[in-house]
Image 1 (tube, rainbow, N blue to C red):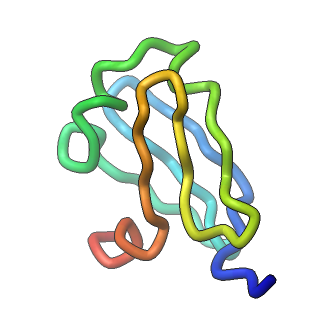
Image 2 (image 1 turned 90 degrees about the vertical axis):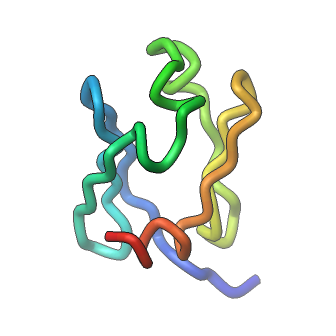
Image 3 (image 1 turned 180 degrees about the vertical axis):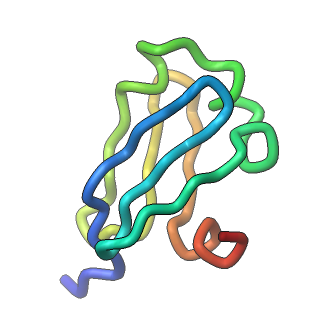
Length: 75
């Protein structure tokens, strides 16, 4: 399997998603990237899976998926 990205960390502030991807840190406005994540509670945000290739992140409790490539294009 080819690795697309290496996701080092996923953190949240009240209004932001902070990702460490491929050794760099990116901050995204939750309202702009996902109304589901913006409205989610701490438990819903904390339970996620990262695809084995690093392609994306899935939050099963709110049925939300984010593509790392798409996020990095808006960073």
